[in-house]
Amino acid sequence: MSERGFAVRALGEIAIRCRDLDKMVAFYRDVIGLEVFEGGHRDRIVFFQINEGYAGHTCVLALFSTEDDFVVPSPGNSSLHHLALTIDRSEQDAVIAWYKRLGLDYRVELFDWIGWRGVFTEDPEGNTVELVAFNRGRGTG
View (cartoon, rainbow, N blue to C red):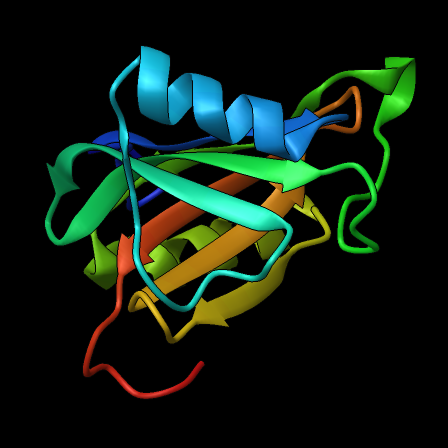
């Protein structure tokens, strides 16, 4: 490990904005063969399991409806919603300390329905980058 105090362990999530969510869901479910997560996701956000992932954080493909208020357009009108990289939960405080040291804006979000905790920032072109970990049973924050 380096002076950062954390290491990326796996790809956590690929998130794509969709103009036609129903068609995209059908494609990834019926053509590609990914399984939809049951329960907890919002009506206009659909998560597919790609594999078991790392340390309890399942690797997913997330499809976001462009009609969802949660979807904030990025520069260049990219269909990328955000990139999530899996780290160890014990290293998330090091991420926050590192971002503070660098003067980067960040936010922390809990996804209780699936047991994840994400630390979000933006890359130089405005794309959202999430460092995410399994957080089940760890409390809030």
